[in-house]
Image (cartoon, rainbow, N blue to C red):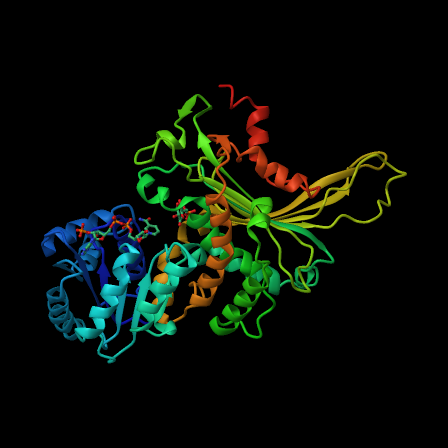
Length: 503
Ligand SMILES: NC(=O)C1=CN([C@@H]2O[C@H](COP(=O)(O)OP(=O)(O)OC[C@H]3O[C@@H](n4cnc5c(N)ncnc54)[C@H](OP(=O)(O)O)[C@@H]3O)[C@@H](O)[C@H]2O)C=CC1
Ligand SMILES: O=C1O[C@H](COP(=O)(O)O)[C@@H](O)[C@H](O)[C@H]1O
């Protein structure tokens, strides 16, 4: 039987997009599973003047697509309380404390508190300080703070932010969300690596030729032009999600499969990554910006035509590059990464490309070249693995045929699989920080990214472009070509052959 959790949640930014789209539905999923039942309450806070009953309507609306009975949903929403105020105002915290004390007693939350900061990072410091100075932190039960990305926008700003949080919370109390770490298949990477001796024994530079990590998005910048203009693909995706995934692939086997040991190995892998000079950064990283395009009868705007985007913007909507890891396991193996908006289709996947057999035993029997073995881990939209291998084509004679051993989770499983934020919320309640970003990881990631950003900022040459719904600028293909490699996943070719770009 599920043991229900006891906690008072305080959500700062309760009227915002993240709270409505992710936080309330995730809490509801935990409620439906009995992880949350009688002993939890939620205080939502922001400046807007909302009443409790209006707040309940907002919460109910946010969970309307999840199957539930009206009574169950109303019961859930009845645990929510709204407190209007500005987080810069000290009086705010007096009201929060009073409401919190009442709810802790009413819902028997054992003094446990979770603070979720669904607000812009400039508010994190002021909120943390006041939680302490106004004695909202009492030390009665566990007290944890959950924060969203972006965690700074450079090493220096991230450090300032971390210093302000660390004055109040210990590293164990800080949960920095990287929602990709909550995804089913990212958590599966370690299972594939360490539960399968056939892969574990090959997981090194003697057998692996190169690693490719693709985070492709079909959507454009949507309504987030304002934010994206200050970020770009490098900071929005590579600094956090992509480097997190890379460190999971590259880390040594942890002594134990727990937070402390896993984080230690991830940090070691990140620290072994080559720190580029400015010149090396320009040679190994490329960027691009999407321009208008037509695909399957639909016209797409270029990035510079999107809302809240400057008409002469130099923000990259695509970034690709090659990382190198200077350790025994990975010396000489390029880790190619790419991420962008308005690419051909949505697809997050990891391709582990194995080395070619030095000699082709079948050269005298047929002209067919064996394909390189590629292990693909599909993160989304489908979830699963495949391994490309060579077999003999059935029939007379001897011909090699590329085959694919493939596993995908079925749709029923996917429908029931916990959404990333739900998993992460449960981890917070269990005090398990394995699937969160730790300061040392974030700090090292910024060191690696800052040099690329600065090199790009100093480069005034024309911004490379790519057509909306393509796989990025030509430079992204040239990057691999100069090493004699190519991207294992090129969905644009499939669409091109079928005339989608002409329609
Ligand atoms: N939305 C998403 O999918 C994602 C968001 N994030 C991050 O999460 C954070 C929140 O994002 P999002 O929800 O989209 O942002 P929104 O702009 O939608 O929400 C911001 C919230 O902050 C509140 N707020 C702003 N100023 C104050 C203030 N002085 N005092 C009290 N409340 C204030 C706003 O409410 P009010 O105006 O009523 O005060 C609102 O509830 C950001 O850091 C974002 O980068 C990260 C990943 C994904
Ligand atoms: O963090 C972010 O991630 C989303 C993509 O997340 P996904 O789970 O939908 O793949 C991205 O659109 C956004 O720009 C970025 O901030």
